[in-house]
Image (cartoon, rainbow, N blue to C red; front, side, top):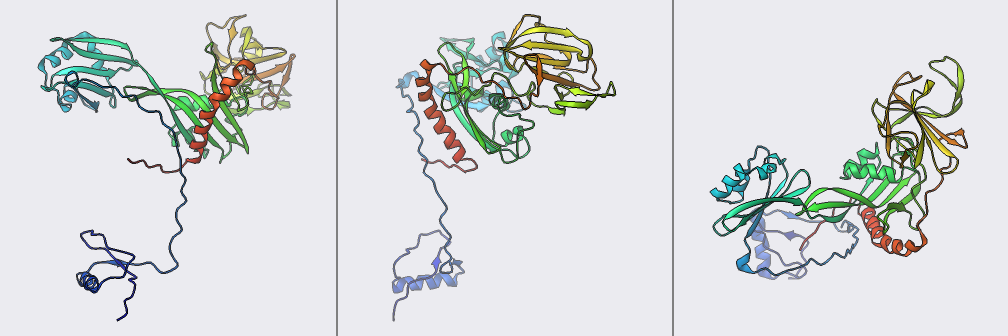
Length: 445
């Protein structure tokens, strides 16, 4: 009898592995037949219908080697961690952690220096160290103020202390695609709101995030996340970012100079930050654009509108679009409450119909780009709450939505080498985040 190669792979109910790739012995044919009698399911593939292998990509990322230190066995207790749950008390959390220490519970109930323990929100991590007798040796928790509260045993008594928590900074990365709005895409990508606002600020000189965004635009961001005892306590600064808008790709890298100044530059060290932001508010809509002839809703006549009106609720913060000096802050005819700023060179800006002006803003005061100088209102000749914004060159109004904005200060020559070195790892993280967007990443031992 001629032996035939098997075309069906049988899998037993016990999960025993079957030999594949060699002809069966007569005894094995009997085993296969018996499996069939007992209702074992068999599955096969039609020849020529094997699926194409899924595309794979090898990603190698060098991680820092963790520091290892030796601790004497008799000097170390047992460290455990749990998180505050809704309805918890300090007693219930410590009980879950196995603490059995009446003296410690009495101290935690009565000592006023540990009152912050009773104001912890659900999700907050509590770290404790116990000895073999389940007595509390040390307790660590990060309070709502970002400080670390420590309860420790000093001999036979317990003491509490509060100090600024040592912070570890790690880089996180994310990538998203615009479907409806920047915030919607950022939320879907897990980007914290403070980072999203930074992203809008970093590219604010090149992109009007209310008018210029298009469905399908993409962003990639690498940002700092601060940790205390392994617990994330909040995001820091954007380290690197890329925004693909209307077919153009803009990239930004953070540079901290020796004197502590922070600015964003392109790959080549060119300043990304313009001397002026494109819009005086982070997110708003234009209700009346720059025009040589517009029907005035109050005067009921056709006249030029030499500025841009942004609709926003009363009280919305208004920011200075560039570094400058206050030349006027007060009430002025149809403008209502108005601020005029003089900037470098022949540039000046005007912000009108404000509900109120920042208290410290007086004539001659210096303001920085992005600083809040007032709040949207309906003062002067206004039919609803909005901001009237003017951009002037040598006293002549220009359309702030289309005028070519001057660039910021370039990166000093003596810092370019350090910047180029800093860009390399940040750029690699950007590429990695962009390439892995939407990819399921699995890790194993």
